[in-house]
Image (cartoon, rainbow, N blue to C red; front, top):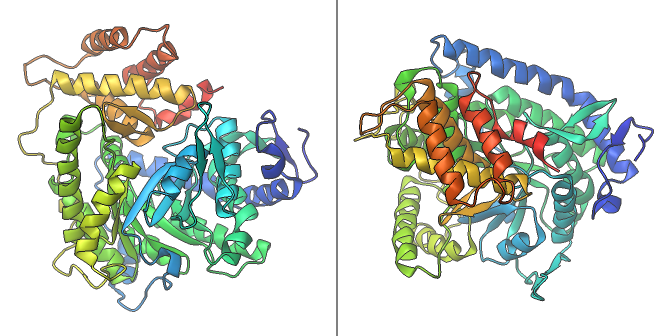
Length: 527
């Protein structure tokens, strides 16, 4: 498709949904967003890299001195919560794909987050098709008929729909503005808002978002500037957009007040994005041996740094009148193994009871079968109340040492932990390269965030030559041996795209220069 008069050029092929999604007016809207806000996005990405360099040479993150007045001021609150977002006791997430969207919207959850980020492999067909599916869902006309002849239709009553665009670090290579790829964040957000904001408001809802991967309040300020400009350009009331921010980086944890403040007329709450948060700890302190974490399975929500982070999130949100949303339960029920399912459900109940007891107003699940389990626990905690913002958690103290205490009781790094990381890395990358960003692996729903933990731990353990509990050292030879064994166990390099996945995992693990995100390199391997 040639460039239109705005300078926007679609380089991707025609795919289902192109005609309705990539209209000339929509492309003009996107080009305007990119020109106005692309330069500041680039400046903030440079600031991220500079901040990491300071951390790598010994600087410890802390609460910002120049925004202390924002934190100390008890007088400000976020905007009042819209009715459709006031009760968020159970939220379900999944990729923006028709079948999964219909099942999630019908699940009985309060909220469904249609994901263009960690749970969606960003093939051009997936991205454009996801936008078309979101538009159909908002208009209550989304349908899906499976190849086996099963029909999927929306119920009369469905969950409130939120959309998660991709993070600031990503680009959409299939749309060029003035010859350069557009920010994937602006692409996903812009199309969603352009096509759906007026319709959602007309139906008594609104353009509601989740914002991922923020590292500072300045990145939240950029989003707020985008919101203000976009609402004006589309002639919808200022404040119509409501955004929940995922606190899924260690640096954002020190700026939760400031992030809410920057977005206060558009803020709906904060979410404890637990898997990306663990990934962020590994990534930001990757060169520092005192921050080496043990096997992934030992880094639970009960370890000190995760407890400090989640409880501070609740205190911060409730002090500012915002919703605090708990983290993901990634378990997938296994109907063939009821004992496995029951043991996992017990862990889910324990997790959700801890969250509701801590004061969270809602929680995340990845599978419709977990909605009743989580709902039962939050109904018991909330009763008839839509939330528990009155639970102020004044007993919680904001403490940098607590947020950075990565002590894990009885910590061990084992061959089993190495093997799990290799296996998850290979199988997830195989699925992602084939266009599936939410992969069921060993009774868990793995997405890019959990795969990031796996490959980052492998890099970190190799980088610091850590010793396993049996005395062996994690080195290149150990990694390669286990990689080859796992490849053979899953069918070898002739299966699916396992060969490409193995090459990519090698690049992520064996390099001396740590790749910031696996999706940056993997994106080049997508069809």
